[in-house]
Structures are given as structure tokens and as C-alpha cells.
Amino acid sequence: MLLTIDIGNTNIDMGIFSGDELKVSARFATEKQKTDDQFAVDFTNIFSLYKISPENISGAVISSVVPEITAHIKSAVEKLTGSRVIVIMPGVKTGLNILIDNPAQLGADLAAGAVGAAEEYPLPAFVIDLGTATKIYAVDEQKGFRGCMIAPGVAISLKALTDVSSLLPTISLEPPKKACGTNSVESMQSGTILGTAAMIDGLLDRFEEELGEPASIIATGGLSSFIAPVCRHSVKCDGSLVLKGLKAIYRKNN
Image 1 (tube, rainbow, N blue to C red):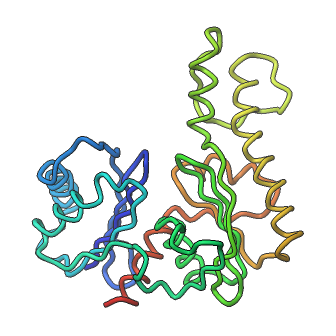
Image 2: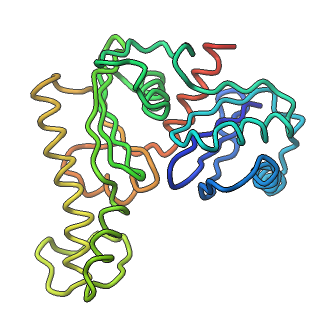
Image 3: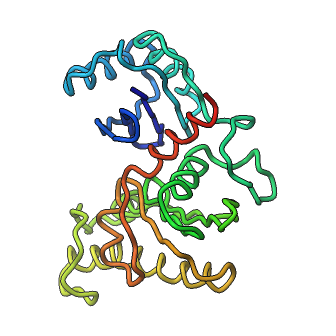
């Protein structure tokens, strides 16, 4: 079995693959103050919950945008499983042609998501990643990573709004019935959910003008299920895209 881990600023996503089948998908909060042993306890609890023996993990691969805890999680996995752990960084084979100004600056999560798109979907593809930040990136027919856009994520934007506005309430992330809200909650949901979808639709149009029409548009990340359904473009949701990409990268390097 292969353990895949994507360390994000808000959450840590993990998946366990048996062959090509994703047997376990789990998520827990990113806590930067934790030690190796504390992360090992988190993984042990998840293994126990899904009745997975650590001894059955034959390898692991990590993508991370939180360097402060990458080594701690790598150490925790090595202690638990005794298996080889690959951390995505410059020099690791991805199969991508990274066509940005400084390829070394490409985030490990973006590389894994791009590989996942290339492995699972027709190219060219645009990938929408709705996590702590909102990102859109493009992968061409030759598996070239063409570039991306990065904007504040939905949760960040909403928190900023409520933190500085005393009279605005905390709201749930649900699509409103109409764009022109007639109460505070509905109006905020319109701005947050429909506003983000409109931004994505507009940027997808601009990406298409610059790069050509994509064969696939895929949304991933923790908030993709809230935003993708109200986009006007046809968007396929795949919450495991990065984990699938990590699986493919591990195989390229093993």
C-alpha cells in the first residue's frame, strides 16, 4: 500500500492506495507546533480507524507548502511504517515540463495536481484548486505546466470581511438562492460563493484566450464542492486529484 500526504496551510490530506484504488481518504488540521511523535499519533489513529496496519504501507510520498512541519511528518511516517518516504522538491521526477520563469519555485501541491490532471484527464487541462488560496493553473498537451493565478481563498476572504465588519454575521458556505441578496446572510453568500465562481469563470475565459480551449477543467481542494457547481463553465470535481498525482510521482521515482 502507498501512503500519500498533501500538507496544506489549513489541512493535511492523506490517502492510502492499494494499486490504483484509493482505499482511504482522510483529513486533519495543520498544526505547526506538533512534534514528530504527535503527528505519529494522528496517523496511528487514522490507520486504526480504517483498520490499516502500518506494516502494510510499503512507501510514502509527501507534497508540502508548510516547510516547518515537513520533516516532522516525514519522520513520523518513517517511524510508523519503516518505509521509504519521498518528499516532492526540485530534482524529484514528475514528468512535467515546467514552463515558468523559475521552475524551482513551483509549489509541490501544484506539481502534484498537474501530474494528477495529466494522468487522469484529457489534456490540455485547467485545474482549479480551492483551498487556503484559490488557484487556477494550466497543463498543456505535452504535460507542460504553463503557469497559474493565485488569489485569496474563500475562507480567508470571508474571515477578513467578518473580522473588520462588526455587524456582519458568521455564515455557512452555501450557495444563495439569488445573486441579489435581500438579507445579510444571503448577500454575503452571494459575494462569497457566487463572487468566487464569477472570478473563476472570468479567469477561465482569459486563460482560454491566452492558451486555447481546454479539453478538461477540474476542480479540487476542500472548497471545490461548494464553488464548482455554481460555475458557468463545465467543471469536474475531483477532491483526490493531488493524491492521485502523488501516487504517479512516487511510481516515477521508485
